[in-house]
Image (cartoon, rainbow, N blue to C red; front, side, top):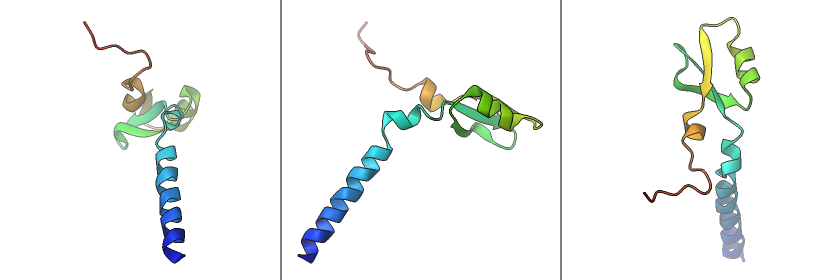
Length: 81
Protein backbone atom coordinates (compact mmCIF):
# COMPACT_ATOMS: atom_id res chain seq x y z
CA UNK A 1 0.00 0.00 0.00
CA UNK A 2 2.85 2.37 0.81
CA UNK A 3 4.51 1.71 -2.53
CA UNK A 4 1.31 2.46 -4.38
CA UNK A 5 0.90 5.73 -2.49
CA UNK A 6 4.54 6.69 -3.14
CA UNK A 7 4.20 5.85 -6.83
CA UNK A 8 1.05 7.92 -7.22
CA UNK A 9 2.62 10.90 -5.40
CA UNK A 10 5.71 10.64 -7.60
CA UNK A 11 3.63 10.53 -10.76
CA UNK A 12 1.64 13.56 -9.61
CA UNK A 13 4.84 15.51 -8.93
CA UNK A 14 6.23 14.69 -12.38
CA UNK A 15 3.02 15.72 -14.12
CA UNK A 16 2.87 18.96 -12.12
CA UNK A 17 6.43 19.82 -13.16
CA UNK A 18 5.55 19.36 -16.84
CA UNK A 19 2.54 21.66 -16.44
CA UNK A 20 4.81 24.40 -15.08
CA UNK A 21 6.91 24.35 -18.26
CA UNK A 22 4.02 25.07 -20.58
CA UNK A 23 4.27 27.62 -23.42
CA UNK A 24 1.66 29.72 -21.64
CA UNK A 25 4.16 30.48 -18.90
CA UNK A 26 6.58 31.88 -21.47
CA UNK A 27 3.98 34.39 -22.57
CA UNK A 28 3.94 35.88 -19.07
CA UNK A 29 7.53 37.10 -19.22
CA UNK A 30 7.84 38.93 -22.51
CA UNK A 31 10.06 41.78 -21.35
CA UNK A 32 13.37 41.88 -19.52
CA UNK A 33 14.90 44.60 -17.38
CA UNK A 34 18.41 44.97 -18.78
CA UNK A 35 21.33 47.01 -17.57
CA UNK A 36 24.78 46.87 -16.05
CA UNK A 37 23.48 45.27 -12.88
CA UNK A 38 21.16 42.80 -14.59
CA UNK A 39 23.32 41.69 -17.51
CA UNK A 40 21.83 39.83 -20.44
CA UNK A 41 19.05 38.78 -20.82
CA UNK A 42 18.32 40.44 -17.48
CA UNK A 43 15.40 40.23 -15.11
CA UNK A 44 12.72 38.67 -17.31
CA UNK A 45 9.60 38.75 -15.15
CA UNK A 46 7.52 41.44 -16.81
CA UNK A 47 4.42 40.70 -18.89
CA UNK A 48 4.02 44.25 -20.19
CA UNK A 49 6.46 46.86 -21.40
CA UNK A 50 4.97 49.42 -19.00
CA UNK A 51 5.69 47.20 -16.00
CA UNK A 52 9.28 46.90 -17.11
CA UNK A 53 9.62 50.64 -17.68
CA UNK A 54 8.18 51.37 -14.24
CA UNK A 55 10.81 49.14 -12.66
CA UNK A 56 13.58 50.70 -14.75
CA UNK A 57 12.50 54.24 -13.81
CA UNK A 58 15.26 56.08 -11.97
CA UNK A 59 17.89 53.44 -12.67
CA UNK A 60 20.53 52.94 -15.32
CA UNK A 61 18.51 50.11 -16.88
CA UNK A 62 16.27 49.66 -19.89
CA UNK A 63 13.77 47.17 -21.18
CA UNK A 64 14.04 44.68 -24.01
CA UNK A 65 12.13 41.72 -25.29
CA UNK A 66 12.86 38.38 -23.68
CA UNK A 67 15.01 36.34 -26.11
CA UNK A 68 13.29 33.13 -25.03
CA UNK A 69 9.98 34.67 -26.08
CA UNK A 70 11.29 36.36 -29.21
CA UNK A 71 12.87 33.21 -30.63
CA UNK A 72 10.24 30.75 -29.43
CA UNK A 73 8.99 28.41 -32.08
CA UNK A 74 5.72 29.78 -33.41
CA UNK A 75 2.82 27.65 -34.56
CA UNK A 76 2.77 26.95 -38.24
CA UNK A 77 6.52 27.46 -38.63
CA UNK A 78 7.82 25.54 -41.61
CA UNK A 79 11.54 24.93 -42.15
CA UNK A 80 11.19 23.74 -45.74
CA UNK A 81 12.72 25.94 -48.39
